[in-house]
Length: 126
Image 1: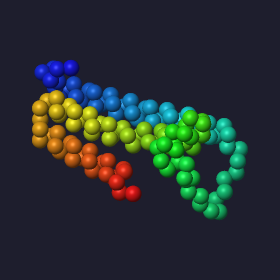
Image 2: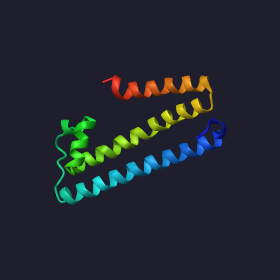
Image 3: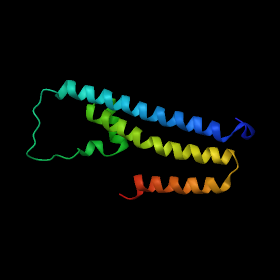
Image 4: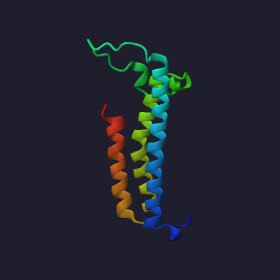
């Protein structure tokens, strides 16, 4: 795609499509995981006396992917949430690429700075 054909309207359409697709895909994955979870655990009585946090197997992307491969309902739900988190990150990354194609250096720098903050908040602060 040439830079001469790249304009703001095209960028907005692609970003809108990216955001809608990301949210819909995440919702579909969470829905599949929820239905699978209810099919397996829907008749169990909840225990409200004590709080049990997420298991360690759902805290890293690698472990979540192994759980998804094993058709673990909580892992599928967690994967859907990762997709939802990745959607705005992908939007910022695409914006940086679009600004680079438009040769708008100032916005590329600003967008890459925002991307750095997002990535640091996801991976570097914990």
